[in-house]
Image 1 (cartoon, protein in one colour):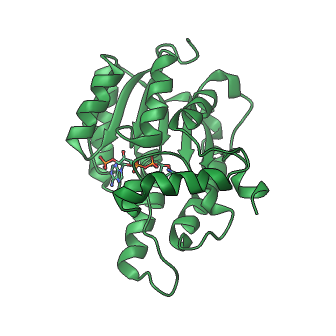
Image 2 (image 1 turned 90 degrees about the vertical axis):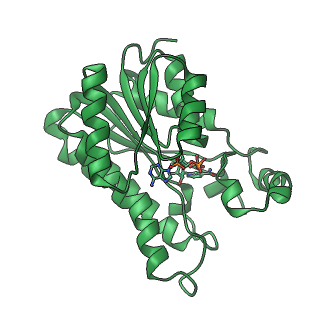
Length: 250
Ligand SMILES: NC(=O)c1ccc[n+]([C@@H]2O[C@H](COP(=O)([O-])OP(=O)(O)OC[C@H]3O[C@@H](n4cnc5c(N)ncnc54)[C@H](OP(=O)(O)O)[C@@H]3O)[C@@H](O)[C@H]2O)c1
């Protein structure tokens, strides 16, 4: 219950899906802090469920001034920053034959630039000895159809966990990355017509070696581990949390 007692966390994309699952597990372990997103309605409803120890901040993770404001205001409000979770992301779906420059820039900005600058803008505020958790994707490891740009961006996020850990050795800030497989989140609604969502989830579940798709809490519990002292010997590491999808499925 107290693995993150009094730790102050900033979770980007904490108003939906995996980010909200992480925020809930952090709250269960005694953390407090900030969830970041652009949609005020889902920020408000997420904060209402998380309770008094969390606040929402409206910000765009691809905008450097917004990121600076998030960490400055978090530090002013909570007095410190211990944990960063760079989770906000998502992807344009298509192939090298179909995705053009606009989709390229958008996908790289949201999944890669955002991670680089979330970490850079946090550095003046995060404590020495803090923990940074990046959210990648198993799409980095296999060429799933239509995930060309997204998979490439997430592969680079896995590299960032190693490079940032090396960059921040002197400050003893550990950076690790979680690579989820298919997880049950509102992201489905962005790609699949509403009436087909349940059928698609059932289909994905039938193809998963473990027999189900992931839940945000699966990723949340892993993030608690990486954020807490239980993982104090881990830095630059990747935890694949995918129900066996990447290496065991046909
Ligand atoms: N679901 C999966 O199967 C799966 C698998 C592997 C990896 N992932 C990764 O897990 C992470 C979370 O995905 P999810 O499935 O939970 O998706 P989701 O439910 O659609 O949530 C995405 C979150 O990112 C935020 N976000 C998007 N663009 C933003 C921006 N420009 N500025 C600030 N916040 C922004 C959204 O908030 P606003 O809309 O309010 O901005 C939302 O909170 C992503 O990095 C995704 O690539 C997901």
